[in-house]
Length: 130
Image (cartoon, rainbow, N blue to C red; front, top):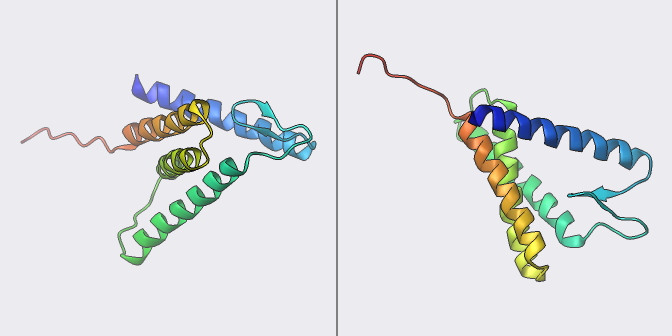
C-alpha cells in the first residue's frame, strides 16, 4: 500500500514539475501550490530554500563519493535526500523570515514526502533461514 502511495506521490509531483516547466517557457511563473507570481517575484525565502537544499544534496552525494561509500543509487534515493533537505531548509527559512503557518505546513509536507520516499526506497531483505 505504501508503495502505491509513493508512486502516486512521485507521479503527481512529476506532472506538476512538467506543468511548471511548460508554464515557465510560456512566461508564467507559478510556485507551489498553484500560486501565480503575476507581476511579482517568487518569494525570496522559497528561492533560498531550494538553493540551499540543492547545495545540501550535492554535499551529501559528494561526501558519499569521497569516502567511497557510494553504490548505485536509484532516482527515488535522490528524491528522498532532496525532499528532506528541502523540508529542513524550508522550515529554517520560513522561521527565520517569520512567514507564517502556511509556509511551515508546506515545509512539513516536503518532509513527509521525503519520509514516504525513504520508506519505499528501503531494501526489502528477507531472512528465510535465520
